[in-house]
Length: 137
Image 1 (cartoon, rainbow, N blue to C red):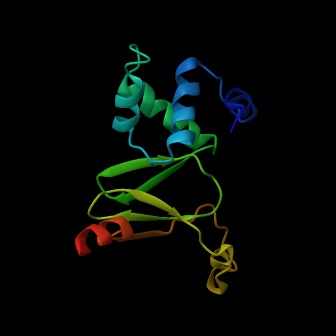
Image 2: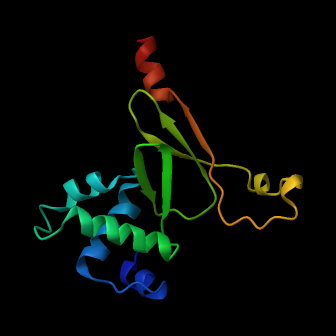
C-alpha cells in the first residue's frame, strides 16, 4: 500500500502522523500485532505516543473497516490490516499468527441462506511447520 495517506483519507480517517505510522506498521509488519507490540515498536520514533492512542487508533481503523480485530485467545486482542477473506493459524509454541488462504465459498453455507453475514472468522491452533521441524531436529 504505497499511498497510506490517501487510503486513510478515502476511508474517512484524518491522517495524523501517529495514525499514518500505526497503519504503516500494520500493513508492513504483517505480524498481527497487539497494542503493546505496536506501542513498543513506535514509541522511540514517536515519544509522545501512548498505548491509549494506539488502542483508540486501532479501534478507529476497525470502525472504518480498514482493519480487523483478531481474537484467538480470550486474553489477547490482535489486529490485521489485510481485509481480504482469509483465516488465521496460531502456533501454540512460538505464538506466531499466520494468514491462511480459505475457500471463499465457505461463506455460502446453505443453512445461513436467510441470514446477513457481516463478519466471518476462521481460526486454527496447533504447532506451525517451523516449530515441528525444530522438534524433529
